Length: 244
Image (cartoon, rainbow, N blue to C red; front, side):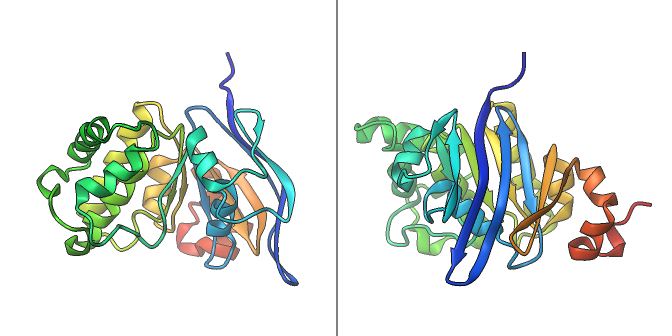
């Protein structure tokens, strides 16, 4: 039985004045998928994420989530349907504790602060932040903020989790820790959609990769196919990623 399509984009455009930041992008993400977007800085990756999650409106085109047209829905309504995300620049509530940060996300699914708190503690334990519950967000290290960002998104109980460069700036040990976390999330049934520049992570986690360049899709394929694609090598990867 074929997997149900979670997310579908149909000829999506986004213009900023005369600039087409996203141009004619179509794609679908099936249930259980681990998808990735790569491309040079300015290719439109985060803009596309912002369109999917409702931070930006599409200039043209349609978006569907589990078959429902969400093109005109605001971000909070999309989150309620099961679209979760992290941000490229981590955005913890600096004066709130780690636990309070995640409780806010958990309140997306319950009106009970107690229930939200218990759920938040479970997630923070999974993210190796159980010893930081009472620490304010402003005192966390970069790796800890990355894990908190994921924890807060998970607390909303997403069916599809969009991860925007959650591995940027991490050392090899920290990188492997996040990769292990994402593998575990996939095993738990959460579909993943990843924007990342670290090709080791892309090759390790993703099943299929879409490559954006100047707002357009220039290639879609398995990580191995993308690593061999001459257009992708020229536009983004460079010759060191050619496996030929």
